[in-house]
Amino acid sequence: MPDLPMTVRADGLPERVTIYEVGPRDGLQNEQAIVPVAVKAEFVRRLVAAGLPIVEATSFVHPRWVPQLADAAELMTELGDEGRDLPVLVPNERGLDRALELGLRHVAIFGSATETFATKNLNRTFDEQFAMFEPTVARAREAGLDVRAYVSMCFGDPWEGAVPIEQVVTAGTRLLDLGAGQLSLGDTIGVATAGHVTALVAAFAEAGVGTDRLAMHFHDTYGQALANTFSALQAGITTFDASAGGLGGCPYAKSATGNLATEDLVWMLTGLGIEHGVDLDAVVATSTWMAAQLGRPSPSAVVRALGSAG
Image (cartoon, rainbow, N blue to C red; front, side, top):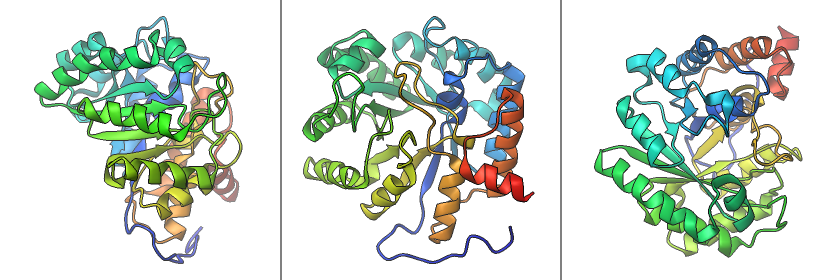
């Protein structure tokens, strides 16, 4: 729709944010069906063409755990030179080896803020996970790679319930101390609320971690993702993970529904006058196309609205 949304600036918000697109990895890893490599490659290319500055392509995790991404090496080979700067998830040194063999330049590790999820997701205790990540991060940095760290269950855990803020800060700072350049704080089951977001960012600040090193990864299980995003913007966060069409969840946490939809985030940022560099129409078209590939409608409110309008 031309001239919509109207742009109305709000005081105290960043001038520009970075959208870290996770649809091809975090979105597709939760699908029941196996998406063909050619479709995945087209999905990635369309997202890059839409202006998304970072598109996380896949995960080099063992295919037994995430069979949907068993074709990670094939996908990155298909993408060729255009895939070299796209980040990939590497859970351990074996995953890093595969990324290095393909000449990739950006990797991410995935930790947990809770004991139970560390055990279920990583087969390690809370403390053991850091020892597992240490050689992976060290080798990646020595090879000149950029390393991002995710920490999951930052706002609540389906087995443990409430997660103390200081426990999240401990997990996050330990991942950063290993050598990660950025830390993405995950609301894995979508239970965060706006005040909780503010408190967590403030706690990291007290621990010496500024907003320039933090990103937010919200899920919309309880419809709070945009409210939480606004709270994070007010706190100074300028990097947000999002998934085109709202795809995704977490295969290890059954209550985790879709990620914050890229289109919903772009609509809100546009209305706030915050620069993001993303072509909304192109992302909507991409998500509509991918929904057709998956055989079901997109859960994104903006995709539904603009699709109906079109």
